[in-house]
Image (tube, rainbow, N blue to C red; front, top):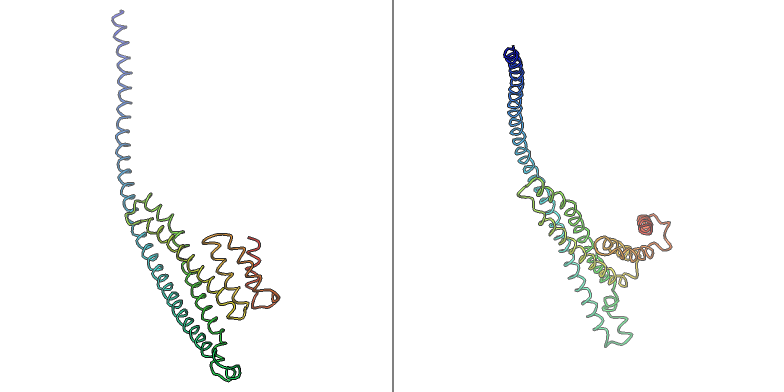
Length: 266
């Protein structure tokens, strides 16, 4: 009897084991199917990643092409502005020499002869020299403003290119090129803006202290406050105040009045 009971118990145990094995085998089959699915999805994801990186590289190449084209246009504009600076300086130097020569020819003459001499008007014509000095300063300011645009564009593009290099592993992404362009443009812009300030100061007396000169100098100091030192704002304000003094209601100076108010509230 005990033997029979043992066999029945063993049979029940074997049935339970068989059921458990069937569940395990079913689980193994499901795992195998899942593993295959995971492998397929992983392969698809890898393929998509490769395609995405290829597309990213293609889009980056298009971006770089547009950036380089824009920078080439900037370089051309800066070159033209600097050519204008040189031309105005040469003309200003010639005008200054002409006036100096005229004053030299007047020096040995008597007062009456000086009044009759054609060199008298030439010797007193400081306005032309002042205008040419002012025009040279304006061309320097134009160059500084263009270079500021190059500086600002490179500063904006730098983090994007850095991310493209680090995250997307785009071989052609070179943040160093943009960093060099950004820093070089800033240095050149500061140099041109300083030269503009010097030119405006030089031309002020020759233009009979015309109010447009401090207005232009204010704009140059305003630009330098962004590129070099915020302390330039104080000088910009002083120049704007000089430019608009006693003419605040005139329409022609309203943009200056508005800019002055903005700087005062900065």
